[in-house]
Image (cartoon, rainbow, N blue to C red; front, side):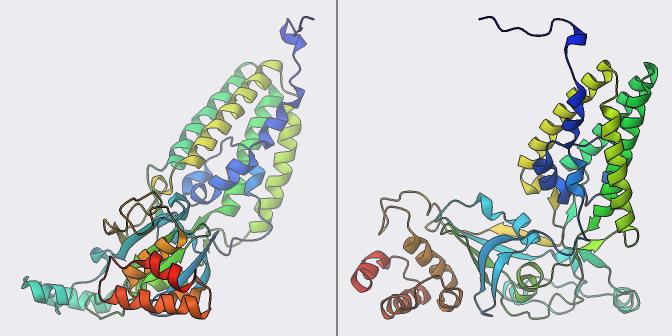
Length: 403
């Protein structure tokens, strides 16, 4: 039996090309947050599945990831990891049973100069820069500007895609006008307008915080432990101010369009439906061109959705450094020189306790069963962690006490 295909251009039917405009909703939805955080998203252009940007109401908060977050010193508990913190250190990149230690602190450039040396400068004997009278007057006369917790990079992938797709859309529009295809011309214009309307309704700005005036003000430690659902631990060394901003504080979203949200969504929806109808009445040539364009755009946006968050965002307010000790690394791998060679939750839990030197967060966050045997093991783990006994046979003690 021989397979037969159309042999002429008129034999191919592209009436369903309008469906390509609504395919790719999952990819567009994943790209929505970084894309609509830049004003370049307002450029009129074709994007796959623009209806993914439609929201029934205004964006009030950012998407959070499921994780157990416990303050080591404060005892505060959070059941979800805020969006911004998850962009700084994506928990999806952490392997099961892995343990990492990060130090997050405010960028010194966000603070105003101070006369008082900190403890490290005093101990090292470093010279301390004194505040001039002009700086002192400016710090009180001119109010400090709020700084965003994060912002999009100028050369972020979505910014580049927005500009390039605008030129691609312009090329299609010129082509449709040259060949005299009125339906294609109207369809491209309406689709581009729908994109602008949907992006205007979704345009948002990351939350901002006012810079502190004195970097020398003593802030209590606010270390945080993040436990993922697959047994990995992320120990964050930070002060209480950073912990409040990233993990336990509010993460409000500033909606740029304060009025006309419903109008943008409603008009954009009607315009989009009319555009899809017009696409079905385009000439064969323009239907083929639009089909190839949407296939290309879907591939590009799919690739952009796979890129790590550091390619989209920058965090000028914070400094993040990996300070994981050598004997804590690679807990997700087989270690033949360890008490327990195979990766396990107990081994990862002990390494996290060793870095925090406390088990209060373990009990508060429910990381271990609340039974006498486990409580005794936790007490032994805490005492050995506080004296720095990194060779404590944690697995043998667990087998002896718990079984």
